[in-house]
Length: 208
Image (cartoon, rainbow, N blue to C red; front, side):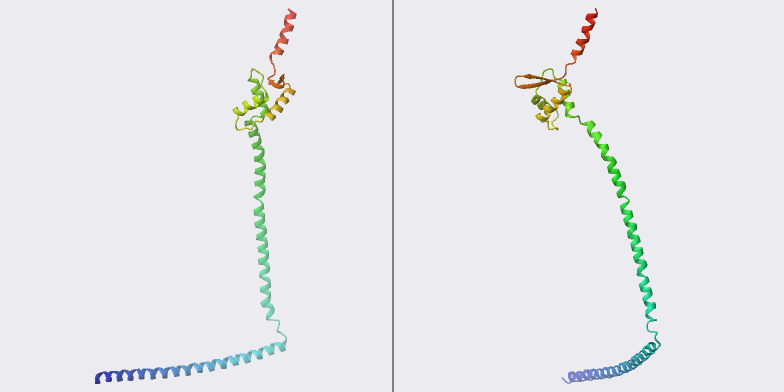
């Protein structure tokens, strides 16, 4: 028990010595900093006093606007050229964007007429189909029969009887088809080609 008490007393004495030393150092540091703060405050007060004196002298001489003018001039002149450059660059960009639009319209205008003749040349008209159908038939056909036959031959096209009938009437008006009636129904045939040959043979017989 005596040994433990001796050790504790020694540790306590060591800690107390360290704490006392730390306290002295802390107080000395506080004194040093407070002295520096006092010196800095004194310097700051002197600078403020000098500043006020200089301002009063400047106002008395009437040169208060001189230092402000040079600082304002570069600030005013710097944004002006930047705005001009930005406007110039924006105009340049607009012209560059508008130029490719003109040739694009010209190309579309050139391509559109080229497609129409190709489409018209490849697909036959309804008049051609009706004329060819009548030429291949040996008997008269009605408009309904012709429309049904063309619908089977060309299923991709919507062949209507009314349209076929008007087409046939147009061919009859141009002497490219013949129309005959059998009761209430009307039939159409291709024009007869043998009649001119028969007429041409008659004058030859008369000459003999």
